[in-house]
Amino acid sequence: FQALCFDLFAPTARRLGEWWIEDRITFTDVTIGLCRLQQLVHELSDRYAPRDPGPEAPSLLLAVPPGEQHVFGLTLMAEVFRQGGWRVTVVSDGTAGELIELVRQERFAALGLSLTDERFYQPTLKLVSKLRAASANPSIALMVGGRAFVEAPERVTEIGADLFAATAQEALAAADSMIRQAATLP
Image (cartoon, rainbow, N blue to C red; front, side):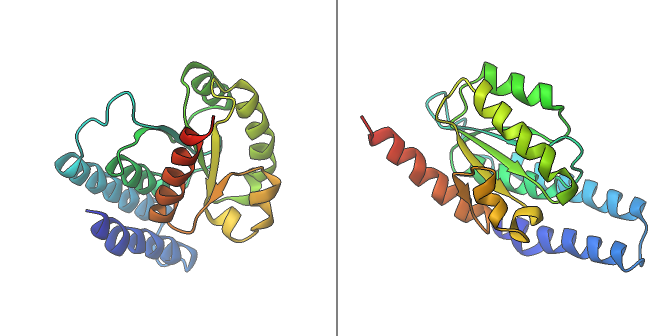
């Protein structure tokens, strides 16, 4: 399942974006293509989904900051973490208030933010401090990813991220390790 997502679907999504930038296809074409890719990911996930990880499994809130529209990577990240035994909540179009309320209500082990459009970086920086302050888990781990962090790696430190990884698989391995280490601390 993961091979299909990362060896076929992710490059297809990138190609759609390149074609749009090159003015070979319309925004509508890109939108329809990405919607279909997301449908395929969800359909296949339903077939290969692991058992319910149960209430003791670590929980992850994956979100894009308000205004961000690039959510396909978030979809793939969610599936990798689900396959890895995590309970995953995905918010792809929430407001800042909704995200704050979610972290206030549930004790997430980690919060993952995906940011592609650098125009939303400054508001995301402010949002992160509000999310940490409101979190029911005072030691919530912050994971960040997306082009806005790849192209400006200093943002990872500036935003106070605990984790940044180049791939979803690396993020899962690092998050699992972080959770195990936290469990062994007194």
